[in-house]
Amino acid sequence: MTVSVVVATYNREAVLLDTVADLLQQSYPDREIIVVDQSPTHEAATERQLTDWQRQGEIRWVRQESPGLTRARNYGISLSQGEYVVFVDDDVRIPDQDFLRHYVTCFQETGAAAIAGRVLEPDRPPLRVDRRIGDLGFFGQREPGFGSDFSGPAYSVRGCNMAFRRTVLNEVGGFDEGFTRSAFREDTDVAWRIRERGYAIWFCHTAWLYHLSAPSGGTRDRSIQFFEDVIENDIRFASRRLKGARKWAWLARLYASRVAKAGWTTGHWRSLHQAYMRALSRQREVSP
Image (cartoon, rainbow, N blue to C red):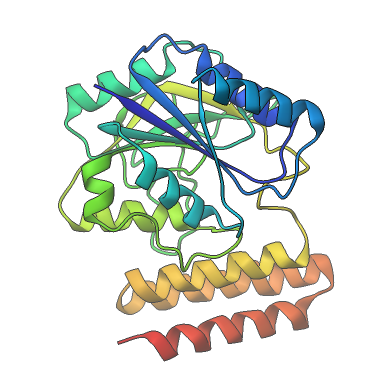
């Protein structure tokens, strides 16, 4: 069974090459690696290596001019041929050469439609929970526990290390491209829609990697734009997927953490408050 691995990348250099090199070392033979590149340019060494891998048939390297994580992932899905589609970020390291094999085994043994892999961060303790992996709680602030050291049913996935049956991704329409720029909550959203269709999600702790959160490149940083993106996308998720008291509790938590607290920390309360109100207004306009 073919596994398609999609790496959406933006302005990453050496760390992207390390990510792809680790994927090329995987023991699972029936695979394809699709790199969806949104970078305007690359350093000469990066361009040369990606070109060599493409010429050798090791990867499929495609360009996307307009950056957007969800758009890039959907492009990768459209190009994929595998029964399973694995997504990893462009700043990860995968020491275990059986990483993809573990995903395939987990799909076959559980029958799940989507699988969340374990995420570790160098020099930080794993983020663990005792149960309910991927459950964000009533207010959306519970630690999802994607660093846990056991496998079991999950409520969601994490974007830097996740996998899906391609047929199910197509059935739910892929990633919602309304989750813009930083695309925060795009992973929670697609998992939510999959569970609404009655499919199971699983957490596979043996499919693990290190997420480096590289300080340069990528789609996220700690600028004012980052916080505005998070607000926009969090409100989109709550407005479209949650109902009743939980929706309003989620929005209240979001204001407290992403506007009041972040505004106090950064000194940009007014800008964040305005971003919150704009996003809330937009979602009200498009709500049925």
